[in-house]
Structure formats: C-alpha cells, structure tokens
Length: 65
Figure 1 (cartoon, helix red, strand yellow):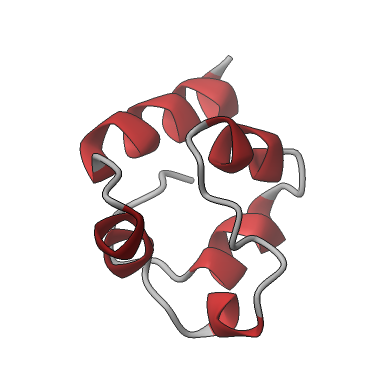
Figure 2 (cartoon, rainbow, N blue to C red):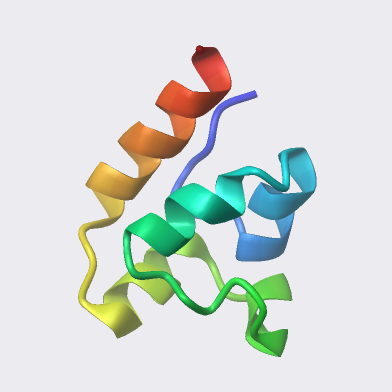
C-alpha cells in the first residue's frame, strides 16, 4: 500500500495507527480532529502550511521499512 495526497487522514490512519506519530512529527496535530475522516492529506497539509510531498515521503518510507 502506498500513501497518496488524495487519501483522507482517516484512510491513512486505518492502514497503520503508528503513522499518526509521523503526522504529529510534521505538525499535523489534527489526527484526532473529527474532520480527519473526510479531509484529504493534501488539504490538511495546505491548511497547516506543511509540505505534503515531505509528509508522503516519510509516511511511505515508514510503510516500506
């Protein structure tokens, strides 16, 4: 499985709950927010001023290690 920017935060966390730590490390403190079940990773990163490509790289690196 590979993470993409159009996946919702809920979909990402359902793959592996440990991905929340990576999201938090990037400043994505919305992992517990009710909007995470329908907000895409790209949208969430945009709202928080975070580079979505860097987040995707780290999430996929974790999954592939």
